[in-house]
Length: 256
Image 1: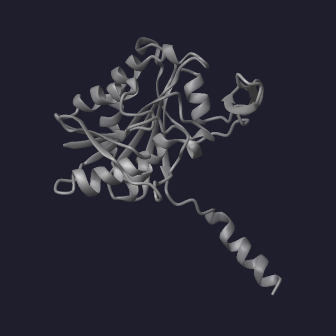
Image 2: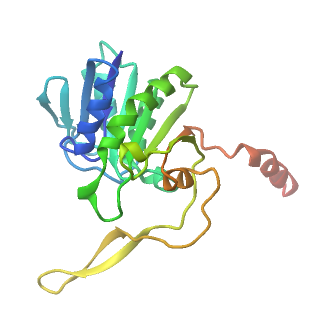
């Protein structure tokens, strides 16, 4: 089995090291094509107005000055054009990608791009204490990741489906198990913090704040990860609200 790895935290991210360990537990044929720089929060963006610079980092390992989507395209269309991978793994992200964060995530986007190009794809993310990126328990992903990925491979990848896996902020021995979860909704955690530079000029920085209160959707990825479970969510590329198609037809028909 050939596996292509990417991420959005960059080629030197510790989460990518964790992902390499997960992949090597499954096969020796592991290729890495990851962004040269941190591309967090860029979602499914493409570099359409800038050249993609490719750097050979090591054996089967490349850095691209571009986004996660660019990296997957480069991996499939150029680097592995003569031998496509059987699986794309994106991550392991520093922090969970649950609920609304799915729409922002470059990690998810890497798996989306792989799926769009016809390769089974999984996004993996690791929870950690808010504001403490120096204490990310990647050992949890490394310990449980291979088993989860093998299980998803055994289950299969229906057309236009990718899997979003989130590991809780716990040590490996404290993980409660695996839960199949829905994508949740939560209060928006991003705020524009006002700051001032050394000359007193105002600027702003987008930052997360912990949101207290609010109901946790039952059966959601939020609930699963909060309870110490590994959440697995099947995501569909088709964003159509199929249940509204017929009501919309009737609405426009009535209005002439």
